[in-house]
Image (cartoon, rainbow, N blue to C red; front, side):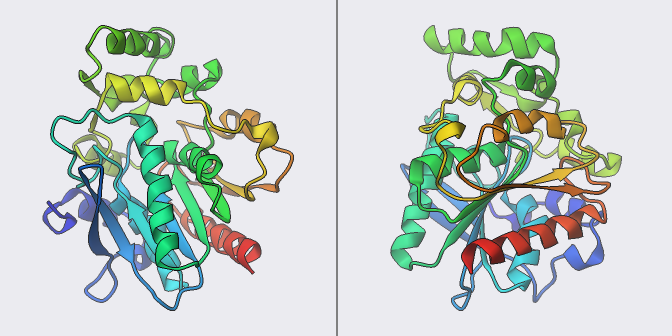
Length: 313
């Protein structure tokens, strides 16, 4: 399966400003990278002349193509090489038969893929992550230690009970659901799956109702199912380095002001603990969690562009 045969991303694109629309001469190329039996899809804007590579990580309600639309493509127009990854079980990545994917696999894959890109050439790499992908950029950075900067649309430490309470669908899911997922794994039901919209506040993914309607029927993003193993590992993941000791690279948070899923106060408890590197926060006016609105889209692009130039000059 490729995105050329998928309608949902195209329908979402119709609600973006025209300059964010792909065309015959402006669209990503599709590549695949085999990792531990998974055929992982990469949405790429390759550019051998680019001085910086930007790797984009989606969250639990999005996929790589949706990252390419709002950021990968625009940054490619600025002369960067961009790669948006479909993590196993999302997008059009083909999961190894019989495999049960954990959140740890997402982190390990991203680390291995960074190493692969650095073996090809030594151009600096910057990570961007939307939603859960934001915290994933941190988890990857502390494990890989080879990126020049990380950018997140939220940094959510799911070990924090307030973060769990406010990002889960309800208190039952946050306070009972995650422990039950761990119990299910222990008794052999780790492969059992549930829709992420049952576990999380997926209804707040996008503030545009028409776009949200598309997300709700897209099984490659917001309508995806996750295993108990994934939910348990995602809710309890501990990074190799805690924020007080993080010294790998600068951090940028691009925070949509109208984010109804992960408002700023859920990211600041984690970011406030980071003292050894620069942490910058930029507010995106009128933007939802997955922003399709202006001026949020342009503000996000401009802030990320300035950040990359600053940390890689």
